[in-house]
Image (cartoon, rainbow, N blue to C red):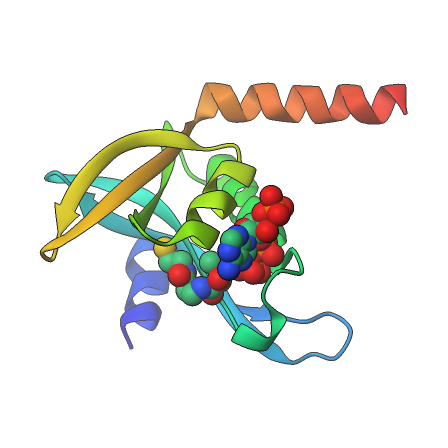
Amino acid sequence: MRNLRRYATEGHGLWAMVLKETGELIGDCGLTLQDVDGAYEMEIGYHVRRDLWRQGLATEAARACRDHGFRAFPVERLASIIRVENTPSRRGAEKNGMTLWKEVTRAGLAQVVYAIRRAGWALLAEQSSGDRGNG
Ligand SMILES: CC(C)(COP(=O)(O)OP(=O)(O)OC[C@H]1O[C@@H](n2cnc3c(N)ncnc32)[C@H](O)[C@@H]1OP(=O)(O)O)[C@@H](O)C(=O)NCCC(=O)NCCS
C-alpha cells in the first residue's frame, strides 16, 4: 500500500526486480524520499533474494535507478542510507559512483549516508561514453 501511495503522490517508489531470463521476482529496488537530518533526500534502495547475492544484480539495478532518478527528477543529489555494518550495501553504493557523505542516527541506529551529485553523475556518463568510444 505504501508503495502504491508513493507511485501516486511522488511518481516513484520501490519497483520489482525481475530476472530477465526467467521472469522471476528476485527483489526490489527503487527511489523513495527519506528524511535525513530533517531534509528529504531521494534514496536509492535495493534488496536481492539471498540465493542470488554476489552476481552483480544489485549493482545493475542500482545503476538503473540512479540514471532514471537523475533523468526523470530535478534532484541535485541521490543518496543511499545504509546500516554502518552492511558491507555489501556500502560496496554497492560505491560501485554506484557514490561517496560517503555523512553519518547519522536514524531509528536509534548508526547509519551512513552515501551520495552522488548530479555533476558527478554527468562526469561518470561522460567517462563511460569516452570508454565506449575508445574501445
Ligand atoms: C546489499 C545487497 C542488495 C547486495 O546485492 P548483490 O546483488 O549481492 O550485490 P552485487 O552482487 O551487485 O555486489 C555489489 C558489491 O558488494 C560486494 N558484496 C556483495 N555481497 C558481499 C558480502 N557478503 N560481503 C562483502 N562484499 C559483498 C560485491 O562483491 C560487489 O563488490 P565488488 O564488485 O567490488 O566485488 C544484498 O546483499 C541484500 O539484498 N542485502 C539485504 C538487504 C539490504 O541490506 N539492502 C540494502 C539496504 S540499505
